[in-house]
Length: 140
Image (cartoon, rainbow, N blue to C red; front, side):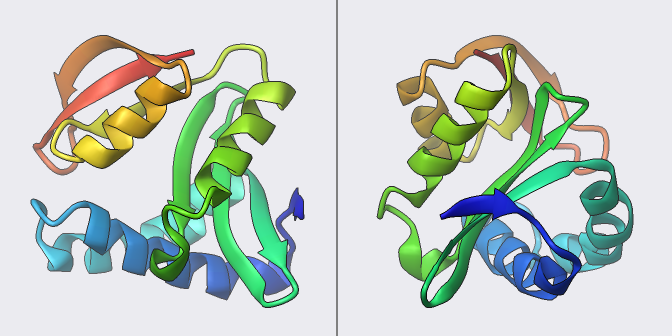
């Protein structure tokens, strides 16, 4: 089931974010992500509309939408990646929002391909201000 996040879900969501982001972005130091934890939790989570994917075993992933158009995050617990949860969450967002865009690190080839397979197109290449890494801006 996909539903809006509740305050009781924040810690689990942040656990998924930290573990998944370290795994997906092995070209960026683990320390960078650990140092970003509080900013994500206290700035980005509150500013976004977040939907979690939950089943009888608990929360397995989430997607965050900022300003009704920007996918700020899509993360699935590492042990459930490749099981269709990410596709369910992105399809949910596509159905709910008219024009979606996102930024994805160029080095995260698996995610780039995932978004292309969902109909997103690369519209720009740029350098992420915070990490200094190259990223793509993609639009649906």
